[in-house]
Structure formats: C-alpha cells, structure tokens
Amino acid sequence: MRHDLGDLVSKAKGVLDGNWLGASTKPAPDLYPHQWNWDSGFIAIGSARYNQKRAQQELSTLFKAQWKNGMLPQIVFNPDALGGYFPEPDFWQCDLSPNYPEGVETSGITMPPVHAMAALRIFENASDQQEARQWLEDMYPKLLALHAYFYRERDPQKEGLIYIRHPWESGMDNAPTWDSPLKAIRVDKSKLPAYERKDLKKGVPAEQRPSHDDYDRYVYLVDLFRRHRYDEKAIYEECPFLIQGPLFNAILSKGNEDLAELGRVLGKDVGQIEEWHQQTNRAMRSKMWHEEHGAYDIFDLRADERIGTLIAAGFMPLLSGAPTEDEAQVLYSILESKAFCSLSDERCYSIPNYNLEGDFLDASNYWRGPVWINTNWLLLQGLRRYGFQEKAERVKNDMIRLVKQFGFHEYFDPFEGAAYGTDNFSWTAALFLDVALEEEA
Ligand code: 2M8
Image (cartoon, helix red, strand yellow):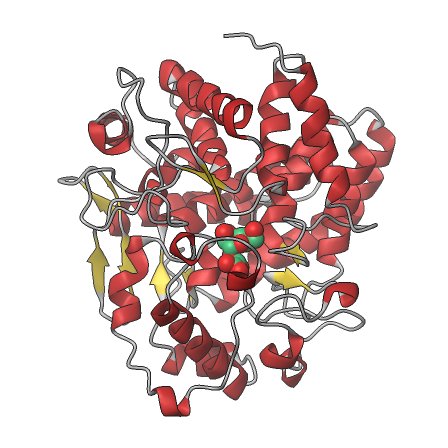
C-alpha cells in the first residue's frame, strides 16, 4: 500500500531536530534527556535515509563513550541535563572501573548492539560514498571491539550466547519475561542504597511505567556492579540476574552478518565474524527454541532453566536467519494467532510486545503489552528475510497507521491504538522515517 506521507515525514524530521543535542539525539525531550545506546542506533537508521552526516555523527558520538574493554554503555550522560534522570553518574560510580573511558560520563551496563546494522544502512544509503567509506574506516574497529567484548566477557562457557545482567540491558525493561528471575532476587530494603525515581515526575502516569518493586531490583543490581568495580568476572560470580535472551542474541547475530559485509567492503578478513554469526544462530536454535509454544525462550543461567514467557523477543531470531524453515513456519503460526494480532483481525495493532492472551497482559504498561515501533521494525526485517510478505506489509502499515493516528509516541495500546509514554519519541520518528522513505527510494 502506498501512502501519502509528506506532512508526517516533515513532522518526524522535526521530532529528531527537536531532540538533537548538537552531536547526538536524546530519545525524548524530558523523560530521557541523555544519549541512549540502542536508541541512537535506531535514530541513525532513520537519519541515514536523508541526512548522512547526522547519521554518521550520531554513532561517532556514541562510540566516543566506548569503554576500554569494548563495552558500549547504555547511557552517555549529557552534562547540561544532569539532575533530570535516575540513575546518573554519581549513582553509577563507573570511574571505579579501570575500563572507564576518558572525557565522558556513562552508565555501567550495555544494550542490544544494533549499531552494525545501522552502519551498514548508513553506508548503503550514503550520497557521498567517499565520506561514508572514510567514516567506516574509523567505525569498523570500534564495532569489532564491541562484538569481541561480548564474546570475550559475556559468554563465559563459550557457547556463542551472550548474557545480560540487568533488565535495562535488554531494552525491554519490565517485560513479563523478567518477572521470575527478578522475583528470585531477595532485596533487603534496609541495605538498598537510597534513591529517588525521576521518571514519575515527567507527566507519564505511573501505571505506564515499571513498578517500585522492579526499580528496587534495578537499583540492587547497579549497587552490586559498583561494589565489584564493574569487574565482569566478579559480577558473573555473584549476580543473581544472568540471562541469555533471543532479542539480544539475535540482534548481535544479525550485527555480525552486517559487520562482516562492512568488513568485506574494507577488504578485511571477516572469518571470525562469520563464525560468530553461525555459532550464535546454532546456539539459539539448540538452547532457546521451544517447539511446543512456538517461540525462542530466554535461558536463566542462575536458575539453570529456560523460561517460556511469550513476548515479541521470542520471534526475533528471524532477524538473523537462525530458525530453520520449519521453525519459521511455527513462529509464523504463533505470530498469526490471536496472541499477537493476526492479519484477519482489523481491531488490533501488530505487534504487541506480549501475548494478548497472557496472564500478565497490561495493555498500557510499558513493555507488558503495548506495541513498540522498534520491535515492529526489527520483526519487519525478520519477516521479510523469511518471505512472509503479507505479514511484513501489515507490520509496516501498522507502524504508519499508529503514527498517523496517534503521533510520535513512545508506545501504543495494541487494541485501541491510544498513545502512551512520552510524546516526540525519537526512535518512533526515526523508524517511521525509515519505512516511509523506503517507499520513495
Ligand atoms: C527505556 O529504558 C530506560 C532505561 O534504559 C528507562 O526506563 O529509564 C527502555 O524503553 C529502553 O529500551 C530505551 O532505550 C530507553 C530510552 O528510550 O528507555
């Protein structure tokens, strides 16, 4: 379906301009006043369609905050906005780590590495190829160092699967998937560092945000990391939350594929990267695939078990080509059921982040039910890869429909569409631009 989107395209660019900080883009005007890791990746994917320089700068700025061990932090703090978010540098105390980068302030965890995917898109869309190549020469070793960090430090058993150690690292902070591993953390409130949430003072109703119990556990984990001075081995020994998940690993695996392509452009030996891609795909198939419920599960390393909560992340291995054709058909049948808004159902919006028939569905709460534009965008790529064209079109049309009807919000009700979270949200604008402008390309 072709859309006349001229006006919305200008508005989307306006949202990104409004959130532009001079060298990077914040996710939203007030709720998220710093630079975020995967947000900047998505923003660069959108900017790549019409502003090569801006897209390059977005990633270059982010990678200036790369830690000496290769880790790319979840947040790069904006010195002009300190005081507006929790937790900020005084709480993270990342300078306790010998790996802390100079000249910037960051948090001490990471996020799903969408950056190689973004870099490839910047390269492919570039109007000035020579400049793009120069930029790539600088960016490539940094991307490689990031991927190497994951396989070296976050895969202690050398399985090809990377663990996360905080729900914020997943990007899907309070998804029902984390309920059981988080419940297993016993928090003694008298020993928890004092903290004050800032997210509840920004005009977004508390019912649309994570609970206080969740935040206590988020804080407990940060406190553990800083006690260990961000030493990964020590954290691995003690951390009660260690999860191998399909979203993170599929994004990393797809990133390997795209990084290898970039490496070939530059004439590099990409053998190791191709091996990572294959190994992670194989490992996801053998350790996470759950035939009966038709999706990929997370693996809880502490409980030593798979946890089968059906969220959109469970379909994400489509992105990296991990599922066999048979598995892909099973995934598709679940995506096509009532649980995730089927093609024949015009009353819902695809793709809700959590099973619409699940016990913990909360259609207005953050990652516990709403539709997110970045999830849609990632699944759109996966559906296309496997030739599920009709579904891919529906996902794309719902991205456009949601924005047309409700604006550039953070997340949307899967039944009503209604807009939730903050307005003027950057990745909604950026990924809308990506799909809107591909129609013109
Ligand atoms: C949300 O997470 C942050 C912590 O990282 C928060 O709740 O304060 C998530 O939606 C995450 O995926 C996103 O990157 C971030 C900024 O948009 O907000």
